[in-house]
Length: 276
Image (tube, rainbow, N blue to C red; front, side):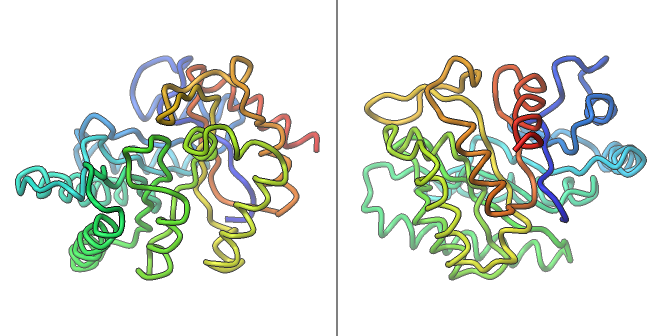
């Protein structure tokens, strides 16, 4: 990854058809660089379709990432829920890798009123198990637990950095809008964004800055953190400060826009970045 790539969380709204293939073609028409395949409602893509997706993505030089299903809780005490959660991540990795994606983002867990330290140990154990299964399948991916925006969710920046230090091949998806919401608006200026990037580099090394997966959008939050994603213009999230910090630290990898107006805000932040 030689630069910061800009793209959308899913198929652009202006795509001719609501298919991954049409989404990739539209990304290229819009002069964006990448697209996150949204398996958030289930991994419903066949291997045959995945091979076609890879072919089209390579033809148009569009890079791909994957977001696993939402229904994941690696802290669940229900054996069925836990088994399904692990399979959602594994299946996302299988189909995603056939598509040509290497970065597999997922929401890791809920605290469920448990001691956060015990939840950490449980999540760590399950991710190690998932990673071994994926390795046995000879699939080369980076599992990326996402920084989460609600206080009920496992996934603080500190938790995920520690996980990434302790498990080889694990690196966070850093969602700056979630960090903004989880901190109740405290992480929302150039210096605080720089602090996050510096801590990331110190913990995982400079090379990790060259392959980051980042989510960004406007955000509304309340006393418990994230409420909903917003357009940048409707939010107090200082996205320009965030983009400047990424540029100044020469962060590379994927910058995925999760705004309700996907490609419009993705193009906006790419233009902001290019003008700096």
